[in-house]
Amino acid sequence: MERIPILKMGPFLLVTIQVDLYDRLALNLENDLISMVSQTGARGVLIDISAVSIVDSFMGRILGNIASMSRIMDAETVVVGMQPAVAITLVELGLTLQGVYTALNVEKGMELLNKKLGSDLAQDEDEEDDQDDRDE
Amino acid sequence: MIVMSKDTMEIVREQDVVPFRNRVREFCTRIGMSLVNQTKLITAASELVRNMLKYANGGEVLLEIVSQNAKTGVRLTFTDQGPGISDIALAMRDGFSTGRSLGLGLPGTKRLVNEFDLKSQPGQGTTVTVIHWKHGR
Image (cartoon, rainbow over all chains, first blue to last red):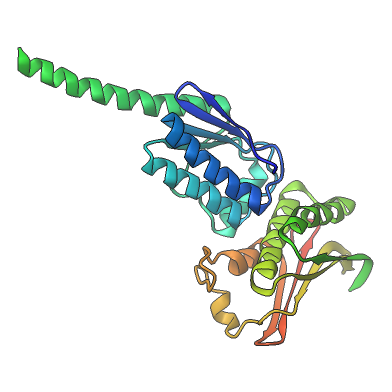
């Protein structure tokens, strides 16, 4: 069965959607991604939709689902590369992709994920520092 | 209204959706519709065929290039033999769905196209007609 490849890059998972998604394919992607997050302990998911010309409410719901499911699994999702015409259409359709982080391109998306991960790590360190302070 | 060219497509399976969208795109490019307007119409069409598959197990779509008052556009007519819609006003409301979806399909579709017409009676099936003009108005 046709599947969309998921690449692991450091603590992140990378997905580039190059074909027009039909429902089965989109649902498979949702399942595969969530299992990959669980298997690899990934902290971020980056979905590149720059080659997708149509995002309808079903596809939008899948993107939203992926983001909420990953969040529960302690990973952030960034959708990158949305075409302007798709953005215009989505908003008129009434789908604002709430809870989904977006970035203009893969580079900016990676930056965003790194920043999110970085601030998480910094917080952990702060907590450790606090403990060190107390020890002294 | 003058019909300049037409074609019909049967939609019976999920896999028919992508070829159908490509067919709509072909009609849009044939009249030189801009990318944003193409995207709006194809997205609307995608929502409507999805409804047709989900609630009526499929149906038929008539694709036409039409012309009226020096305007050219694409008209799509979706016909199914499904259960029909008992309360059209309710079905057109944002956020309402009998099928556990987001309920954006019909009202959202109406916002995306220039002309939208829905005819339905319980037990008699549903016909939805949409028109999108070349320049989006």
